[in-house]
Length: 336
Image (tube, rainbow, N blue to C red; front, side, top):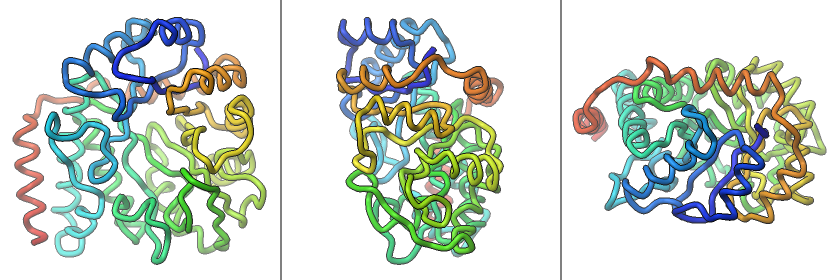
């Protein structure tokens, strides 16, 4: 197995993808809107990916946050709310907001599990800062670390109850970035003291089974490298200050915050201390280049991956999707 999570080009595997994936044996896969059309198609695709890998617990990821970040969309699947909705309810009814976030996430997981997806790249633990770029914006769970942590925990608990693993992101915090890392490299000049606010939710939830790094430079910690490529940030801040010792994946290697060849990008994030490099585009030449930059997954990374996927066992229950959505909507109506 190689320490890669890879995307796919379309809604069905090509012969070239089958051959490449057999050879490379990536740790998992990630799906996007281009890969989904309906329930039958998605289930067939995820079944084939598991058969190809020979692993029933193969991680198949998706970014299904709700709001503007949703790969599975109406009319085939219902729309889900963005993080700001739960933040707003928390202002007047904190416990109702926490329960609404939990049942919403449980319903999300049930929807994903139906089509063979078992990892959701959620929750965001980025603490939103005034005046920051809108790349986080309404996706965030709030501007107060304790609130973000409380709602984030509810999301993790709900996902587990529905049979999915959650991925906290974007460690160690994307909430004060003034630019979009999809487009350019954000540089955050906040002091180490100021950055304690950003770290707080991640520290509180440092037991989360999976986490994703931020392609952001924090000059207080490393003036040259973004967190995903910084051995110093990963060792001293993520593994050290936050105390995170579970599976750590990079954000997408295809984002324009990163420069250089894809071989160097993949090698760089692994050398810096990420357990897994994430590449999302499904472009074959880029994936081949990423594969050249890595060797077999390390024993410690494999342990972390197996432990993360094992959290699903015993977590899922048979709650009704309709009942969960009804309970969520009734709770959210309190905000009005």
